[in-house]
Image 1 (cartoon, rainbow, N blue to C red):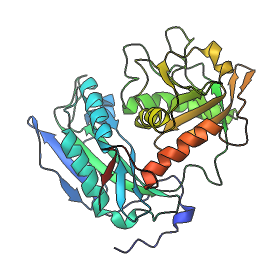
Image 2: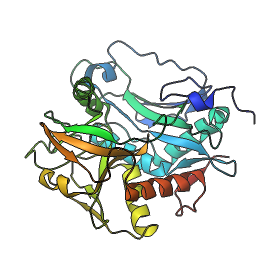
Image 3: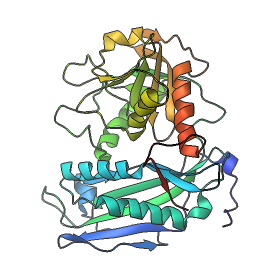
Image 4: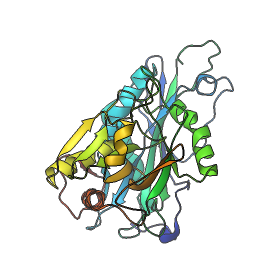
Length: 341
């Protein structure tokens, strides 16, 4: 199969239309059989529920070319599970998990020419999403829905190497107790836009959100989970019912324990103990781990011993091991790698 004539090494993290996408519609209580289409446009009524009441959710994962030339995806079954949980919380019909994985498989296979070659540093980003599609003017769930999957080739999240970032403790709240912080709803990301633009304008790379009830515990950023390393090399992640359960975070905790022999803890992390950690990172699909060098808490700087020049040693090992599994350098746990072709 011949690859598209794309300058893979200079791709940014932005949208590029590919040849095919998957569409399935829900009507009269059932999903149709779904199909691949070349039409990248979505045509909806002006009163569609998604426009009026933000009834929409999404997922994000990637396809890779491995060292031996295969195209694979990483743990798509967990994305399917998470979207099912989100759909239930938003009173949307669950798209069957086996069909979710099959739809991802079909779309990647149909766009195989857009999967960047091994060693380019680029990947094929996959975006499954769902929304209420019929007109709704009274406040209630939609009766009809559309599930779609598109792909776009993207460059490495970090251009020119990984450099630790600076984040601030945010005065805004990302999620409330008993709210939707634990699901991947579009409305959660809309809530974070004002805060992230404000952070960038003030010279910060990201926001650290605290729990909205007490503002004493670390939660996450607008789009990534926190990962800390103690001075005795224990890997710690915050635990809260309002944190999105990151697939990357769960995978890194497994890697830490079973590949690197490290102790791991998933627990409440209080803001006043952050200064005692040796390393800090943000984990998610886009970058795997973004190292954090400094946190600014209303003028007070918390500088991690790992510094502002490179990843800390433990986070570097975690990053190298997980990306090695994804790219086929390191044997993966059973079920982690879904082979497309």
